[in-house]
Image (cartoon, rainbow, N blue to C red; front, side, top):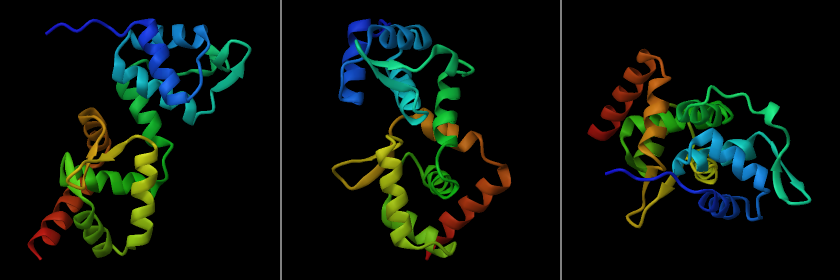
Length: 178
């Protein structure tokens, strides 16, 4: 199946939806060039720009502060890593634990594992909300959380030390057996 790239009009609609304001044509053009019209990449690129405070109001709508401010390796993985790196270390650890549990995870299991590590449920709930607000995870109608995209989960797992992943796998297995 060959899907065409998202058009500049599509990127403008996506940006308006995320930013809640009309984007400047230069912002739309910059996103198109940076992402080659890949919808998920375009979306993540917008979230990255927002998180780095690289968007400002101009006379023609929201614009990038400066193309020179955008220093990325150019891949979707780079954008995802940059977004994840901005999160608090405890949130990143919670997301790693969630990624170890699987693409879909139950908050109760996650909380039990975190509790076994000395964490507290109130903080864990707050971290889940932060990850949700950052568009990293979502919750479905069955009250299971899931990663917005499988690539997010992959990136989270790829950047972890093997020993940390082993330890998290062991904790999850022990909690599930209890």
